[in-house]
Amino acid sequence: MASNKKSSLSPFFPFLKIVTVIGARPQFIKAAVVSRAIQISNKKKKIQEILVHTGQHYDYLMDKVFFEELDLPQPHYHLGVGSGSHGKQTGIMLERIEAVLQKEKPGAVLVYGDTNSTLAGALAAAKLDIPIAHVEAGLRSYNRRMPEEINRLLTDHLSTFLFCPTTQAVQNLLKEGVRNGKGKIVKNVGDVMFDSILYYSKIAEKKPTILKDLDLFNPQSTIRNPQYYLATLHRAENTDDPKRLKSILKALNEIGKKAPIILPLHPRTKKMMKTYDLSPDDHRVKLIKPVSYLNMIALEKNARAILTDSGGVQKEAYWFKVPCLTLRDETEWVETVKSGWNILIGAGTRKILNGLKLIESRKSFRGERELFGHGKAGEIILHVITKHFMKVKRAAMDGQ
Ligand code: UD1
Ligand code: UDP
Image 1: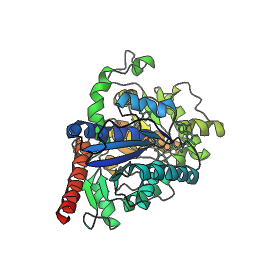
Image 2: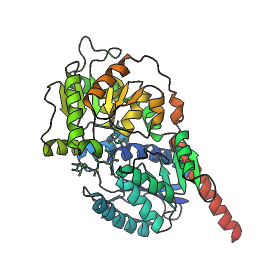
Image 3: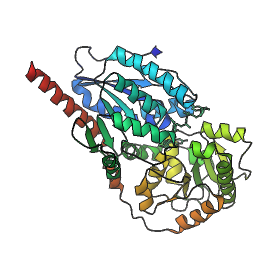
Image 4: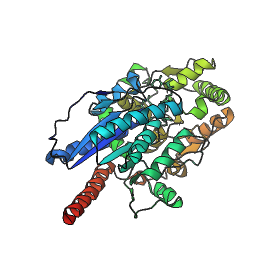
C-alpha cells in the first residue's frame, strides 16, 4: 500500500477528518463533486479529506483520465487491488482499507454508489465503529442477483448518513425501516452526478474534438439533426451471458444500417466479446476505447438516441433530453422511465429495434430536471456532515 501524498493541512486543526473511498469510473466523477465542495469551503481548513483509491479500475481511460480532467486530487493512498472475483477483490480491499482507517482514525468514511469498493469501504468502517456517509443511498433494482444490489443494500444498512439522490430513494429506504432519526440522517440531497453535469457540460462544449475526430459532423448532421447513436454496455448480466450479449450486438448491427453507432467499449465487454467470439459485424458499429468524461458528454448531448445498461448514462440522457433505451430488465432510475424519455427494453433484438422506433417517435418530455435536485448536492452533503459533527463536538464540550 502506498501513501503518496502528505496533507498540507495542520495536523492539529482539522475539525473533521474524512476518508473517502473510491475505485471505479463513476465514483471518480461523483467524488470530484464533493471534493470540490470541500476544497471551496475549506478556507478555514475545517475538513481534511483523505482520498483512498482501491485500484478497482486501473486502465488509463478508466481511471487517471478522470483525475486529470475533473481536477480530482491525487489519492493519498492507492491500494492497488485490481481485478478479481467478487469475494477476493472485496476481501483484499477490506483488509487494506482497514489498515488505512486504523492509521488515519477519521471521524467519518465517505463512500459512493454500489461497487465492490463501496461495500469494502463501508464494511471496514463499520467494523471499526466509524460513521459512514453513503452518497447515492436508497437505490434499488430489487434484483438480488445483481452484485450492485447486495453492495448498496448492505452499505445503506451500515450507514449513518444516507444521502439520497431522489425522493424515490428516500421512500425505498423507508420501506426497509431506514428513516431519519435514531442515529441515522436520511436526506434527499439531489444527485451529485447532476451537479457534475451542470458544471462540466459548459466546459464540454468548448473542449472535446471527439465528434470531429470520429467524423460525426457531416452536412446532414447538426446539433438539431444528429446522425449517430451512442451505446454503452458493461453490466455483468449482459456481458457475461452470451445469449444476451449476442442478441444486443445483433440489434446494434441492424441499427447500424440506419446510422453509425458509437460504442465506447468497457474493458469487461471487450474481454467477454473475445471470450465468446462475438462482435458486431456491421462496420457502422464503431467500437472505440472508453472515452473521457468531457468526450462522453459531447457524444451524449449530440446523439440521436442512447442505448445503454449504465446507471449514470441513463440519467445523463435524461438531463440532455436525448431519448434512451435501457438494455436491462429493471432500473434503479425509475423517474427517467416515468418521464417517457427512457424505455426499459431488456436485451431482445426485436424488442430493442421496436423500442428504438417508439422512443424516437416520442416528442414530449414530461420529466423535470429538478427530480434530481438543483445542482447543489455536493454542498448540501458537506453542510449536513459539518453540522452534525459540530453538534457532536459541542455536546462533548458541554459534557466536559
Ligand atoms: C464495476 C462495478 C459496477 C459499475 C462499473 C462502472 C462492481 C461489482 N461493479 O463493474 O457496478 O457500474 O464498475 O464501470 O463493483 N477491467 C480492466 N481494466 C480496468 C477495470 C476492469 O481490464 O481498469 C476488466 C477486468 O477484466 C475486470 C473486468 O473489467 O475483471 C470487470 O471489472 P470490475 O471492476 O470487476 O467490474 P466492472 O464490470 O467494471
Ligand atoms: N463514461 C465516460 N466514458 C465512457 C463511458 C462512461 O466518461 O466511455 C461516464 C458516463 O458519462 C457516466 C459514468 O461514466 O458519467 C457512468 O459510468 P459507468 O457506465 O461505468 O457506470 P454506472 O453508472 O453504470 O455504474
